[in-house]
Length: 75
Image 1 (cartoon, rainbow, N blue to C red):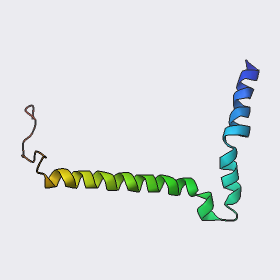
Image 2: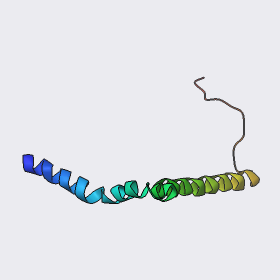
Image 3: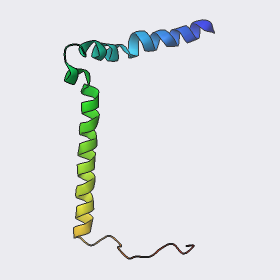
Image 4: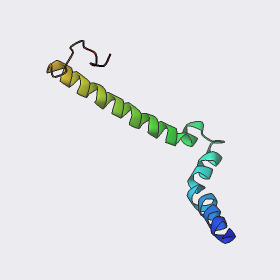
């Protein structure tokens, strides 16, 4: 059983985390390059936010949204 857990450790430490170790070593040369994953996630979030706002504007322009001021019946 001990070998099983050491195998999992070797998989993650030596294999799956190797790209992140390379990014950590890159930090000494380029801060922007080392944070490329953060830039990618921020770009994805910006694209998703822009799409969401454009969809909200489209529904608002078509008057499809119910804007009546009512509360739930249990309040």
